[in-house]
Every structure is written in C-alpha cells, then in structure tokens.
Image 1 (cartoon, one colour):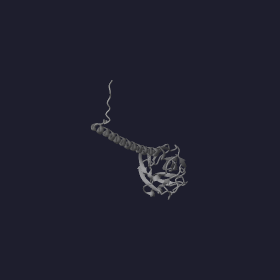
Image 2 (cartoon, one colour; image 1 turned 90 degrees about the vertical axis):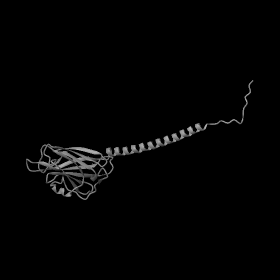
Image 3 (cartoon, one colour; image 1 turned 120 degrees about the vertical axis):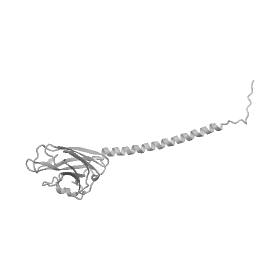
Image 4 (cartoon, rainbow, N blue to C red; image 1 turned 30 degrees about the horizontal axis):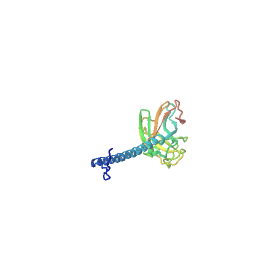
Length: 224
C-alpha cells in the first residue's frame, strides 16, 4: 500500500558539538586514570616506607641479657658505683652499631639520655674492680651482626660524682669510649631501683629495671 523509497546516497552524520564532547570525555578519562595510577603508586611507596619503619621499630632492637655490678665501700657504706649491662641483638634483628644507639638512665634523683660510646675513655680509670665483673675491654668492633654477639655498656659513678656510660664488648672486638652524664643517679644503695632504656637507631626500644639487693657486701659481685 505504501512504498518506502530508499535513497542509497543518505549517510549518518554526527554533529561537530557531539564529537567535541566525546573527545573531551576521553581526555578527562585518560587524565583521571593517570592521576589514579600516580596516587596508587605514591600510596604504595608510602605504605612500604611506613612498613619498613614499623618493622625496624619492632624487630631491630637490642635486648638486655643481664645487669651486673660489684659492691664497693666499707662496712656500713656499701653501694653500687658502676653497673655493667650486657646487650645483644634481639631475635630477627638486623645488624646494629651500638655507638648509634642511646641509653636512658632514670634513677636516684636525676635522669639523662646518652649516645653510647662517645666521650672521654679516661672515665674507665674510675672503675676499680678486683674480680673481673667490670673488666676492661678495648679495640673491638662496635657492630653487632649476629645474635651470638654481645656488648657490655657501663654506667659509671665517676670520681666527681657525675654519672657516665661506656660501651665495652664482651665477645666481639669494639673501641672503648665513654659519655659523661648526669649526677646523683649513682651510686645506688641497697634496695634502690633504676630504669634503663636502650633505643636502637631505628627506634626499637628495650627497657629493664635495675633492682639493688637490700643487703650488700663489700667486694661481692651482684646481679641486678
């Protein structure tokens, strides 16, 4: 009844405006994708850095194995004038240079934080020991690289009454040195307490409480 006439010359056309909008949308999508990729990369890098720092704080640390001393002073005036703190790498820790660590000593009426292994080695002459508990050691490597490596850190009451610390080794070679420090923390009398915190370069910390026995005998070695 009706006849549809098909003109083979007809062509579908897209308006210029529509084409511009389409191109703009493609460009916006491409830019957005680039921003997302860059943001994702930044967040991943930041997460990896934060993860490494957190791992260092948790695993890269020194552990305190023992704290020993030797009682000094005459009868009725026995006291602790020097403390030897034996430290080693915590399980899973990377190598640590103990001279890059710090020691915080809180005891008596004062406190202080010191860089281990810096200062005047002459302070070692203030240690007067007879049984070797506070024996001197020199010319050793300051880096603990294995869990079997140990180091000895001294907290010393010097002649002038100030407190000093010194990094000395027990089983691996290190250079002797001391740091002069706070006053009134040493000597410690019977029943006294002090808190020791050692912080590794990465931020990992280990804390121990030093407790002096109530009864002290001159010349006797004690574990605190």
